[in-house]
Image (cartoon, rainbow, N blue to C red):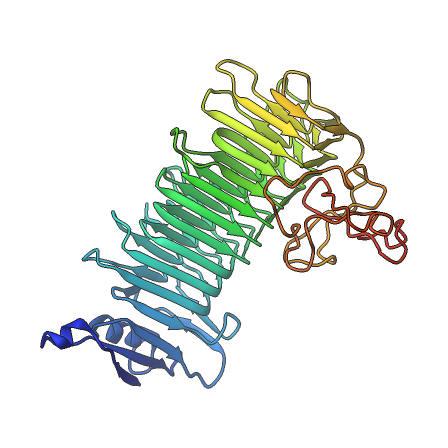
Length: 487
């Protein structure tokens, strides 16, 4: 079914034909003929203008692709009925291939469906969805989608986008793999060149050589990630995320849980940023790194490994992360967070909590380390809490840091918010000892939980003091002294 909607355009005034936006309706779960998704896409590619595809299916079901990938070559919005109602089974081929042959401005939006069993040809990328262009002329928007069990032999087991602006909202990437011979990257998602935005999404059980969940690679790439969980992803480097010379990277209200770097660097995140003098500071804030591992004997940065660039970590929590957990610990290794040496490596840690992070099979506590070889990097730390204070030469500048047991409670999602947190009790030394250099309005849990609350609100109603870490203890204005100690 096709519906035409005329659009006003400058061409009409000039006497030229005006493009029309058409709506095509999918009524069949087949892969050929009238009413199918493939037929609707073919018609949309031929129709001028930005078209729309909707679904009117009699019942939920699966569309199994039997004639190869679905190729989209013009601006198109595909609005599915929901990820639980329609599944695209790529049948061991790629599912979606987006093309912008004439490098004109285009918008591709896909929502409301699940994509499974995508497999790329040899040495190609994007098992579930692929787009590549030399210049940035496309906006790609994916929302309310699941990408599961897709495989690429190069990059982006589920999704690979290079040379576009990409937005993911409410997307699950589960069990996807990049596993080819040439540095397979981004088990869930590979992104290069453009602006990347990820909101309210889940990367779980994805794998690759670099960036088990996500790899961002390009000095022309900018990324903003919020309210997102990276869990149980695996890679040689960067179990959750691997960034290479990224221009800017902002992470907030997110969690990295049980990700693994099989080799040395970055169970949660491996960060390498651009090092030009005008490069903006990248930021990780209001986020939790818990139970991540870097497994090599000389592993570093089980939560976060920073190779180079300019990075600020503030109001974050690193807990229960492990380096070389089953091995005799190597010298100069360990650390839930690790910073490399180099004059173009500058790290700032503010109001961040470290607790129960260990190195080696003896569970030696190591929270924060730095490569102290020349040329020297800079590591500034203030208002942070360590279970064991870093060695004297690790921190180059700092103030108001304290040592002690944070008394962290177990990781949970029962205290509100979209991502798991480690609550702190009233008795924690983290309470009211932090700072808020980024002027954050909430803690990791987001709306409804202010970033700065005085735990002793009854006695000091006009005092506002920030807690150390990603979690703000709210106290209890009735009992005041911790009877409501869950916060």
